[in-house]
Length: 425
Image (cartoon, rainbow, N blue to C red; front, side, top):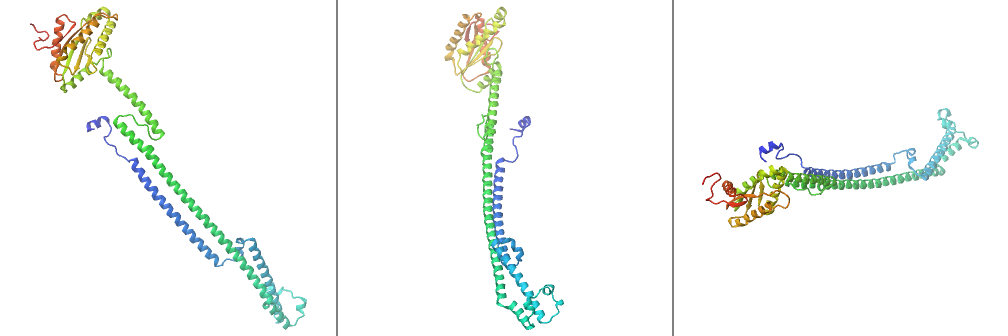
């Protein structure tokens, strides 16, 4: 399309913009990059959590937490160990306080200077009657004897049982947590994989259901063809709708072309289309013949029978001309009662056949069986060995004039010795 055509239609010869196929490829690349990044982040988070768990275990192993804070982490059995240890510890504290009171009285110390726990410890009647040496010896046995050491060892054992249970249960919870995390991470990776597959399916759907059908549609429209029914439902519906409109427009175009090229009364080619055929045959060096045809005394038919009957006579003439000549010939109505025919691929060797056809038509017109008035045709013809020329019309008109001058109802072909219309002998 040149600049003039572009300006006339108002549409550019080329369009600019983003191609859906290019954007689709870019989106796929971006999705792949995001998917790989998410996997890397997931693996990194898993490693970080495992490092955190290891640090927590190390922290627990240091045993820096108080027993009261660890109580809620133990099993009921471990809680029993802890309670036993605390009870034994309280008993040892009372034993030590009692021993301190014995030692204080054995040494004759001022009791008011001692802590309230020591001053409130009441000695038994048996210990009150002991001598200072006996009281000191009894106090020493109470805190350094085998019974005291056994009870202290029992406290240590119960605490160790408790700590072991706490550490074991904590470690089990940490391992379960790590296992749950691993399952969660694998689930997350699976979901990411499904998301990736879904995106790929979406992109493939766009390619095969949208981009490819659009390309097919553009090619079909560009070539002026019906659109192939393909793609998604909406595109198929669009194609069907377009095809319906295309067929209607094609039918309308054929109808308009027929109306533009054919005479509305007789259905034969009109003068404009006939002139176009002559122009085409100017450049084709093939033998042709031109016939100029007048309906004899047609004015008398119109005046005597009316224009409606006259129209029926013209239709009858047109029908006989169409039936008498070949599909490669071009009969036309070029005026009110004037017809013309161009015969292709003929020369003077077919003159007798053409004259016989005209005679047959005149016989049918002069002997009507349909109630129409009698008419006849005067025909003048000319041959050309090299396509249509302007001289053909004048020569055929001269032949037609000779027919009319010699009583009408006949056919003659031009010869060089034939005088032109209006010339005197």
